[in-house]
Length: 433
Image (cartoon, rainbow, N blue to C red; front, side, top):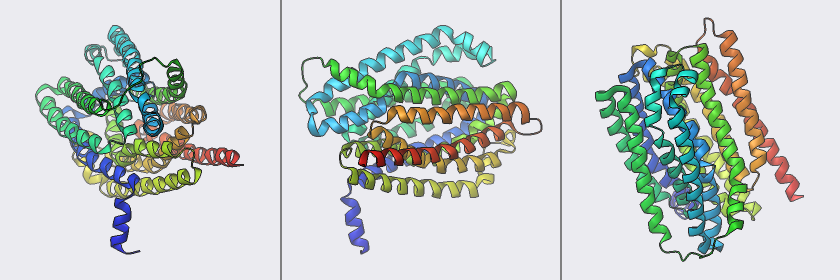
């Protein structure tokens, strides 16, 4: 096959085109967000950056409950409806939005009321009560944005998502750097809120423009509501357990180590996130294409193999680059982040296993194996917390708490990927036979 033929084949491959748009849009967005994160860490220092990290993690943890798995649910349902039952799409979106508003509003209200209790008894930092209360509204905007992205992914509007992500990336950089420089921690938190509000608004206009062309059914479909809740519930539980376990891991460092350790851990995991940005943005692309081919096992398997290869390569290359320059990168965080280099190197190692397991997660969802996936992920998340607890509590003397936590995450994720692969293969073989 010549180079020209290969290029032509790729241009005609919808999976490749959607993946390319997702990649291009997020290079700008995630890249600028990463630079902003480094500058915010440098401005605040590791201790206050640790406070910033726990506030952000607390908001996002509660936010995961409020999305109720509707991001992935929207992608799967709309990808299926657009070919067979387009008239049901507006009703689905209306139903999904009602669920999102109801749950996220309730969770935001709970945090607003109990912010002081959470800050004093859980975070051991009474002064963080007011920031938590102010940022409670972020839970609602985060949940709405998640559902909107799921809707747009189901429509295959990855080009539009890419444009929005680029705009959000630029604004994240500008708001985070300027507001943190002038207003310290409060400025960094305000930047989070402003960027999420703008992201939500941009998504709204694109969704509205897409759905105005579709003639909707007039009656309420209770069966659709039950179907949505049935599909979303195990996904919501998975995301909730993961969010709680991630928050508990941060809490372990606060209780048995220091906010400085948490700051180091947060900084290192920023690089895990940036390495995983390509696999992360491809998750909705993968789910959309796998869902469209649920009843065609051959096509389904081909897409699965292609995406595993893409994710592996897309993770390995930046992983090696970050690993090679970890010492150079660590210097940008300032003198208070001494020892960050080894943490960044270890965080890179996690990404290979997470990247591939993410592909299998989308495959499980496309086949409706949501409860099965919940059980496997429950093992992973509980296992990580338990292992980290024993290591940090009983072995942290003379060792960095952040280092022990990252080692725990690596070990459990290796086991998790092995389980995901063999259980999925066994289930598909059983269906085929």
